[in-house]
Length: 103
Ligand SMILES: [Zn+2]
Image 1 (cartoon, rainbow, N blue to C red):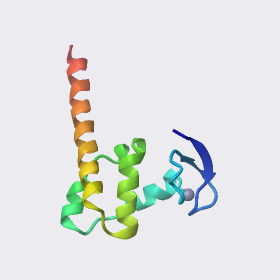
Image 2: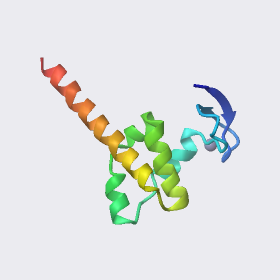
Image 3: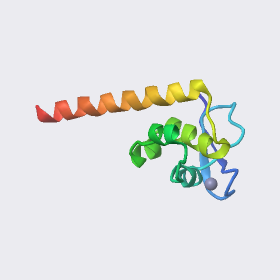
Image 4: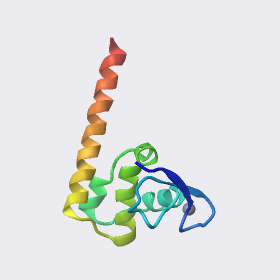
């Protein structure tokens, strides 16, 4: 896996971390979060994206999917599935953490 820094293509100010060579259009977290925080009108997608805002900050995959929806107004079936899967995994991990705390 490659990881290097490149200037954000939107604000051309902040640095963004590039982890894939296929990634041509690089954006920083601040620019992506602006899109993430926008209101979603589509009911189905609104439900899909209803997760804690912290998750978008800590998980670049969730953020990039949400960002792409914000930019293009749609997602592919595969992207939706992957998003759901990641959210489900995060929820399950959260439960495990709670269990450990109780002990
Ligand atoms: Zn930026």
